[in-house]
Amino acid sequence: MSDSLDPTLVKLIVTVAGVLVIGFLFQFIQRYVARRVRDSEMRYRARRFVGSLGYVAYALVIVTVFGNELSGLTVALGVAGVGVAFALQEIIASIAGWAAVSFGHFYQTGDRVQLGGIMGDVIDVGILRTTIMECGEWVSADLYNGRVVRVANSFVFKEPVFNYSADFAFLWDEITVPVKYGGDYRLAREILYRVADEIVGEYTAKASAEWKRVVSRYLVQDESTAPIVTLVANDNWVEFTLRYVVDYKKRRGTKDRIFTRILEEFERTEGRVAIASMTVHIVETPVFDVRLGRRNSRS
Image 1 (cartoon, helix red, strand yellow):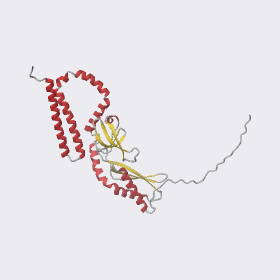
Image 2: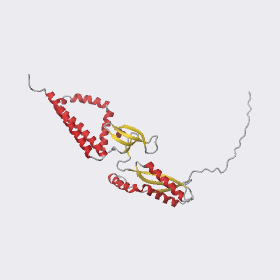
Image 3: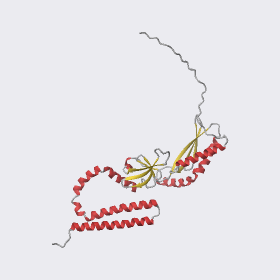
Image 4: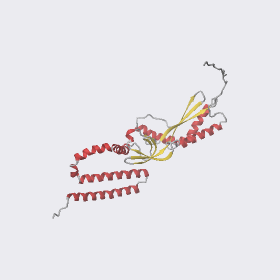
């Protein structure tokens, strides 16, 4: 009876021991990260990154220990891999999408995106799917509707990815205000500027600083983040357009505050400036000449 151990058994023992040591080590690292990192977003991303490194370490241990045995299966694994890759192409594309999202800065948790036709806030990025808290649909404006949607990561290669908050956490928004002819359009313009400065003036400096970073990073022309009022005269009224920057999560509330203040300021002008509406005047009713006749028919 030989005292030497079976080489395969030794390799199994080494593999199990290596996996256990790596498991304990990476659990300790994750707990350390959770205690030391205060920011919730950074803590989430660090834990996910450490977990991914753990899986890579497991694979390296197995390949290192059983490298010789695996080399003989190269051809068989290659042939089988073609079939598996074809059957699992969507899963493979999703994993590749996860890698692109993780290292290509497509989006991260907390960003508001439109992915695969779904618009909402990213609440989790998994290896296969991105989880989104949906906005819109039957709910007006950019508000949550309560649905949690999981979109395959492969969509980053199939459709454009719209990110509302990645490099520039503001949006340009506009409102139109129709004003009656005969009113003081200069006063109307002044009121719009004053209301815009009151409601969204706080965003101007912050948006300007962020926009400068965007201009320095990308080939994009410089743009003013200050409110702008433009005027167009049409057949029915004088139409003012107020353009301004706003936090991407506060579009609806900001628009409500702006319209409310505009109406209040117009009322204080005592008729010098008034909101216009469509009015139809019937000047004359045409005469209708209706003649009724009987047509005889022969049998």
